[in-house]
Length: 241
Image (cartoon, rainbow, N blue to C red; front, side, top):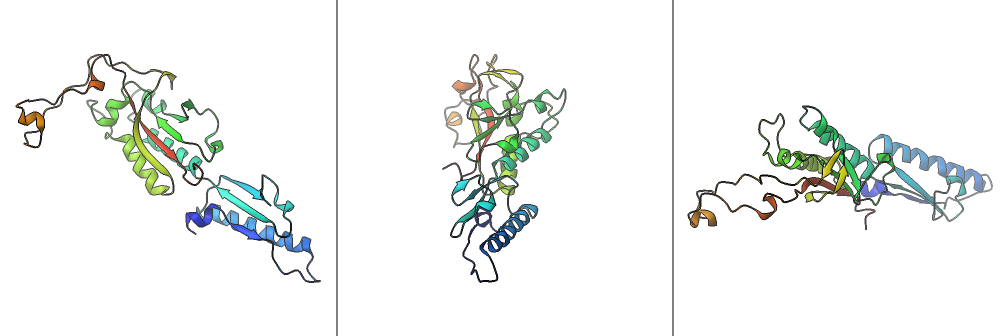
């Protein structure tokens, strides 16, 4: 079943009730059918194990409250599954020396660290996964010498999330951090600035046409500037409005 079909399914209690089948028996049979289908969708991976239920339009009501003409709706959310997968993959792709970088990944909801269980994330949450280590940007863009892993960790995880959870909106962006985050004080202030990049020997390069060997240094990478941090941002458009 496609995600749109698994996201919610509604059964109206419109079975024909004869003298031989009571309303209670029809209700119980329908509830059995629905819960069996719900569990099948979850077990086959067609629906998330994170869901909430509405009965007759009342969120959280039990299935047994179903009345004639009413409905049972199961709404499945993917944000918890996607966030857990992404966080685990960020850690798995991290270089490990002391382990401080690998263990520094944090999950934010809004601008606050999420301290609850990932499975309890609100379905409409915008989730940010970021590493606050002062060298996180260097690792991600490949400016760290002698790295044991390939650069582009955040982008690689973004692509993996997109493939596994195509219904999730996920993108990479550079964000600002402040305060104590993941055991590091943020933002880190650049001391020497970023190394200047050589201009391409190509007439399409304005620096080359001006006879300059190096590209102009970006103002945000100059000494004394706070760094921004590469981050993964995701949300579930079915619930984020």
